[in-house]
Length: 79
Image 1 (cartoon, rainbow, N blue to C red):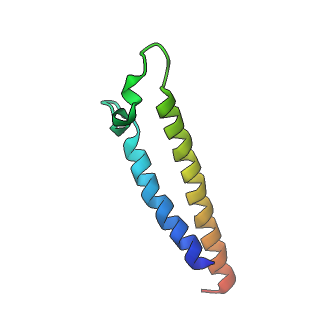
Image 2 (cartoon, rainbow, N blue to C red):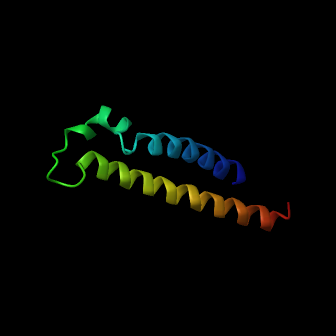
C-alpha cells in the first residue's frame, strides 16, 4: 500500500509541475500552444483555461490526499 501511494504521489507531483507550467501568466503561457490563445477578449477565460484549471485542482487534491495517506500509513506502521 505504501509503494502504490508513493507511486501515485510521484506521478501527481510530475503532473502538477507540467500543469502549472501550462497556465497562462502575465505574458502568456504554454496553454497558448493548445488553443488557449484563441479566446476572445470579451469573455474571461477560454474553455481550455477553465479545463486546465479543473485538471490542476483535481490533481492537487489527489496529490494532497496521497500525502495524507502516506503520513497515516507511516504513523500506523511505526516507522
